[in-house]
Length: 393
Image 1 (tube, rainbow, N blue to C red):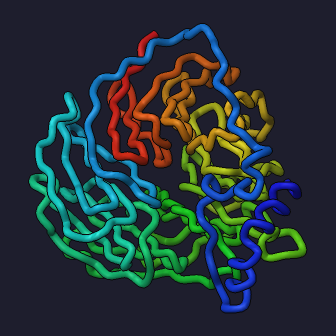
Image 2: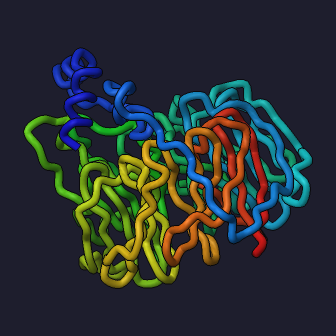
């Protein structure tokens, strides 16, 4: 880890000096800057051959615009898949065959999306706007202006929208008109990752991971913190070494909420009161996923690892994808699924982490979260390819 930090420091010395002199600043997301100063020494692992134990079929594919420097992922309701791109395109695709039901161009850049629910499709902009479109035809329903760039896709449920801005604020908006119902704010560390940290929720609370390694449960009624805990504690002599930002979207399942922090730990807590259930030192590179058996994560070197849900013991890790910029895992049925920087989708057995299947997309990175649907899942690539896959034994 120290070798990577030293290399990163060499590559960013001038930028970091300027940042530290002028106040709070951000670094690009983990996958794009870890090891940048050492490209000649750190190469992605070549893919290994294996005997597939599962059939994966490409059901259909469609195209939306490029993600640019942002992260986009699809969302879906019972019949339609919603996708967006950095150039302002948003589309509703038939879930059965990928054919466009409608497609609009919003005439402005987008930086996050999409989320669907309550009859709306929600996207975010670099100017801090949350745009709500009608699911029927993509027409604009309302616009809400927040206090900073929107990097994480909003979340919508039960008549409200939750969104967060790049300055650390979390907002609750009325789904009818975008009116701000409450806003929660906090002070950011001097240096943070430019990370699209999502929000999770249950019937009582909204869960948000923060820069500096904190996880907060906010009351849905008024945004007051119900509890706040340390996923990891910042450590090190420099601000760069002390980055311990919570990555991705907190995983919520049953009585647990789990999260992982860069250069820190993976930790699980009681949803009701924030009491620590277990924590393991672990240099996370992405957010985590959880099913009824385990918590699954990807470290800063793209090693995929499972942690037993009750005690945090690790039954397996898959190190044959090192340095391939693997994205956040999807736990689906008996599999754990990840995408990588070449658009390869890897299906692992959840019991032992062995490769079960592999399929290609369009050769560009799969940065956004994979979306479970019906008998399979959806993936969106950085070049804007939207792919529907089905799994079959």
